[in-house]
Every structure is written in structure tokens, then in C-alpha cells.
Image (cartoon, rainbow, N blue to C red; front, side, top):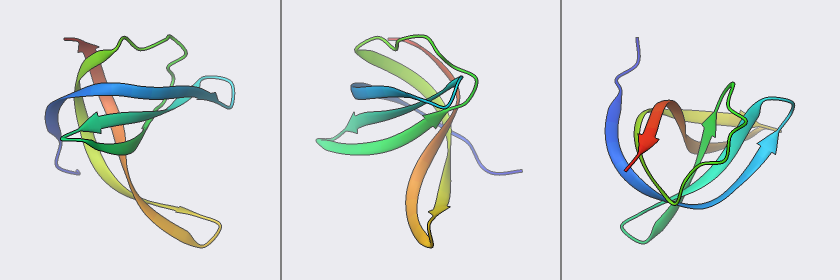
Length: 75
């Protein structure tokens, strides 16, 4: 199992990926961090509290650090 963390973020942007996943930009301490929410199609509010995992995402032979959101709620 991967370690999980919890924190509060501002939502900068969000877009649907595929049929039922969301890719979002979350802001923490002035930095935008990309995150994925699987099986989520609803619009996120301006601020969320999230339980997440850090993942090294590989796409087209490029790696980037990304958050996988396991659970979120409105702040």
C-alpha cells in the first residue's frame, strides 16, 4: 500500500479526461500541482480537502509527479 496524505487545496482548473475521470490543477503555497480523480465527473468547488497519494506518472516516456485523489470534500 502507498502512503496517503491529507491537505487543503484551491482548485485552479479542471477538465474531464475520458468518460469519467478528472484532471485538475490544485494550488498549495502558490504552486499548481496536477492531480487525477478517477470515477469523478462532478465539478469541484473552489477549495477542497483531499486524501491523496503521490504517484510518478509515466506518459510517452516522460515522468511527472502527480497526485491521485482518493477522497475529497468541500472546505
